Image (cartoon, rainbow, N blue to C red; front, side, top):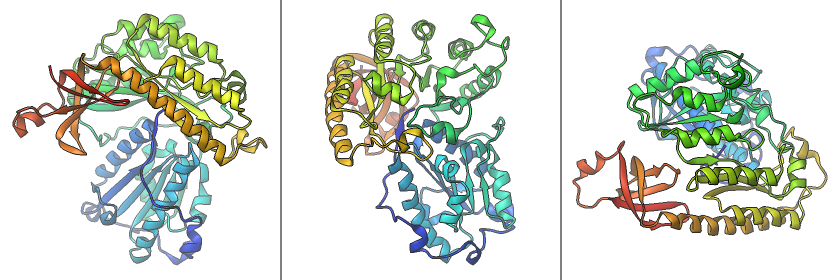
Length: 489
């Protein structure tokens, strides 16, 4: 799964020290607030983390709007603020507390402000988060996203609520408030059953739970009817899709079980959807049959995101990843044999406990030899409750910083080399939006998921804006490590 972060100021280490109040000193927000009053109220959501969190935020926004709230981009004007949090790395977690600190000050002046922490930090901390930040009204884990309205009703009845118990995720009939009208996320499997020694995701996201093929197809049909052109199927470990479903159902393939490959065939014929993506793949379960399906199905994009985490077998074993670097290389070789131009991205962790300089160099060598289009890199961060966090062979922050910087240099260098293959080519680009940093440019993505900027060459403002949502053939005129510039061919 790919991760992103939002900017924040320096974290106050202990909010309770800065804002010394107890839970009884502040009333819970908006007790018995009538829905007619909420119709005039605004909400603001800040999302940290991966695509799964972004999809969850869209679903929660849909719930809030169904309750009568309207969205605002300004946190300071919001009556309800929701932080959808990430705990994959410590710095992402700490940013949440920094953001909370600002809103706690507002809550002291306005007790009716509703503060919600959702997502993985909420699941990880549970009621301890309420004790640490007593001004919070609701703490809820990812498995409770669909229960947001019920949980807020409890808050409005005067309760401070923590919903972090393990739960079955019910199908959500509320329409998400999607951030795009062009491309949409579609959850296909929640949770993760892996036991990687560094990863907190299974503890905070719960056990694997696949949605049925019929429900997924129905959502895709609905998206097509709304005019969406692209969907991305999401799962923490998407290759595990279907293994918890009973055999013999709709769309079932080899052996009566349905897999991700079968699901791709099952939804591929939905009229109106032009592009299908999926993430994130696990090398342990990635199959030749999936590669064959991606090559055969015209709508499935030539882009694979397959984390390798380390290029050293001993480190991979310590991580409990369940594969070797040789197996990973065979997967990449198989993809490039069948789909030579496919874009391949990955994730890598440096300075895992006990990693030697030679083992780190094996990771660098893998990046150099495979030549990824993109690698999301991170220095190892101990996470609470994970085995690796307790080991006594932790590496220093200086080593982490040095290795991360050195790996990033190679990642950028190889990405720049890979990007040159686009120069002068005509690429099919789905135009998604105006470039937020330059209103004279549109932006979209190739089938290989490379970001492309389109300059306006003589069109009126309305004509140029009318290109949003279209798939255009663009002549690539500039190639940078992680983005391109093109003109209409």
